[in-house]
Amino acid sequence: MRNLNAKLSAVIGLASALAFAAPAGAQTTAREVIVGTPGFTNVGGLEIITKAFEAETGIKVTVKGGGMDDVKKMATDGAADAVFLPADEMDQVKDAIKVSTRKRVGRSYQGLAVMKGAKVPDISTKEKFIAALKSANRVMHSRCNGTPGGAGCTKTAYMLSSLFDLPEMAGVKHAPSPYGEGGDALARGEGDMAVQNISQIMKWDNLVVVGPIPEEYGRYLDAVAAVPSKAAHQDLGQQFITYATQPGTFAIWYSRGVDPRKGAQ
Image (cartoon, rainbow, N blue to C red; front, top):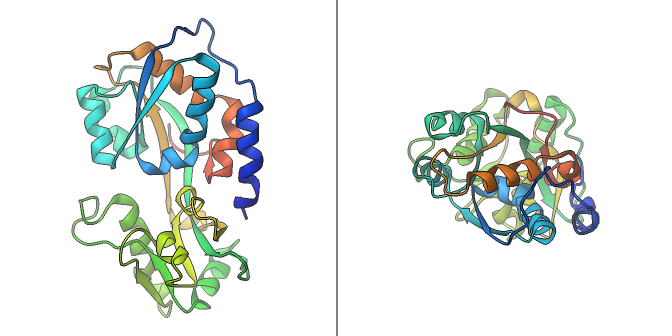
């Protein structure tokens, strides 16, 4: 998963050229499917997959983005036909999910970024990762104010900022982003490294993804998708989820730091 930026243009081409396998009996009458998703899954592959789905099926996809609490509300009130969330967040609204529709998407990794043209360190082990961080003048990360999971400290922000509270991180020079996330600050030139969701690092042309934070640290989100039981178009929600998680989309998810082979169901 190293240097994923170099693969992205090829994967986008794959998305436009690949004939995805539509589910048997899929309806092709032009209708609309509403998809609720937080940012990490949207930029983690959905923004490419939705375009391919529309082109192949003729069904319009309306993406409703938001924070995880926003997407959970979409699940409970049926405002979306398909919702994407971390597995533990989906557990919190399991009573609002249609039985047997929950599907694993994959493990979305948080990773390390450097500026394009900078030396790319080896972070393949915990020891090498720590050494790389300690070599930096300043490692940028998300700001976390207030209760973890709340408005001032999202789930992702807490996972990233709390990394530097670990004893082995003593001596790492780090700082929260004044606004936006760690990768945003690095892209503005406010540090020389940053930790952030890999999918969200990749929106910046001047950043390079070094690789995922070593898995032992648990800095990842296991994404799942499901159909809300109150959704207006449950058939389309299920069709979209089946499409988005089929083997043909593996390269798209993987190029954005999401590994469909891993993660909770």
